[in-house]
Amino acid sequence: MSNMINAISDTSFENEVVESQTPVLVDFWAQWCGPCKAIAPILEELAQKYSGKLKIVKLDVDSNPATPPKFGIRGIPTLVLFKDGQVKATQVGLLSKSELVNFIDGHV
Image 1 (cartoon, helix red, strand yellow):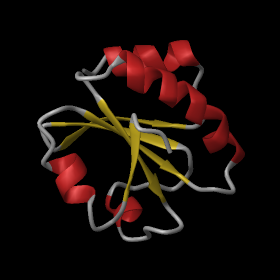
Image 2: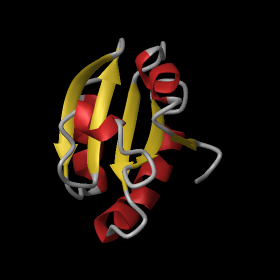
Image 3: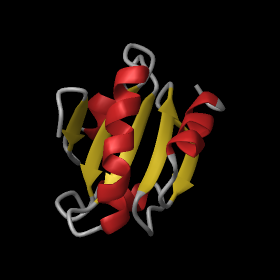
Image 4: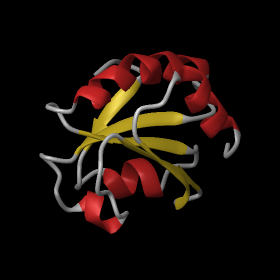
């Protein structure tokens, strides 16, 4: 994790995501997931680009089993964009940087 992207947990999800005044992109991931590792540097770059406009957080599905089922997470990586505490968009699978920018820009 970097200083731009925070790890969250089942316990901190409500505070970090649902109650956030800023839109939040949640990366549901796992340590063993290759595509999750591949998208990580892109998320790092975008966390800097969208600093102040969008918060990016990561939730390890293996360590935090309570939250993913609440949002229908069945595959990883899954990116869920929250705005005003509500799910605005979901994207499953590895995205290129341009696809991820289009996904974020289309909903923030």
